[in-house]
Image (cartoon, rainbow, N blue to C red; front, side):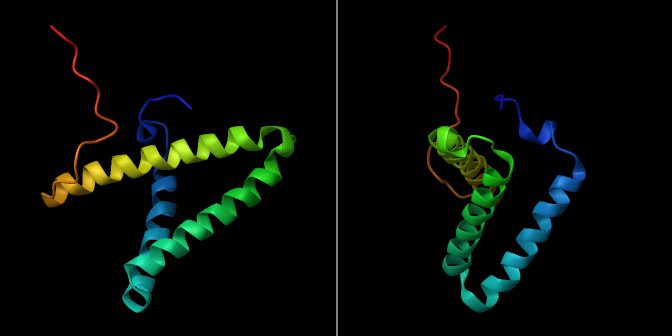
Length: 106
């Protein structure tokens, strides 16, 4: 994937699906708490992504490490994007972003 904003590449149905998952997680967090639902969401995402990968990848053995690296990097970038956005939205200093571009020396 390129470094272009994924939001520019995705249709509204994608975000509708995302919001459905978030609604379920919000409902579950009222009963089970944020930490437990966060862990359950990560576990479910890992399980589903493993299922999807094995379903579409013809050389699962040969590309496993590449897939793990790609997914780990993708998650880290998405988490950084959301930390930046939600922190700014709520006026909370969440520390320096890993996504920040170094400024060009003048």
